[in-house]
Image (tube, rainbow, N blue to C red; front, side, top):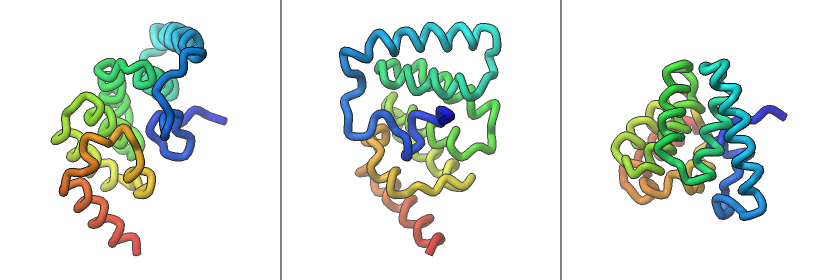
Length: 144
């Protein structure tokens, strides 16, 4: 199964779980080193960038994950999942305004997992913001 993203909703590693279990620590460090090596040779390998972003988020290294998510959006400017992940990274780095703007862009591009958006712990910073609820209601109503 291909590795989709740390914010995809369907295969989320973070949903209702602590970020990193102690037993996973060494595996996560191994993956960061391994995929980092691949990116040294192929810096625009989007699938590997997504894995790195996920792993950095799991390690709590949100600023580094944000940088990677920005890079993915630059490489895939019309990819709704890339924008959704960037919105999550903005929220994790306490940038509520940018998170809301980027989340709107993700939805405009076609991201539609509204149920997951309401539960995604990465969006905790903006979940109670009236603009978040308004945004979801606005697009959910278009779906009906």
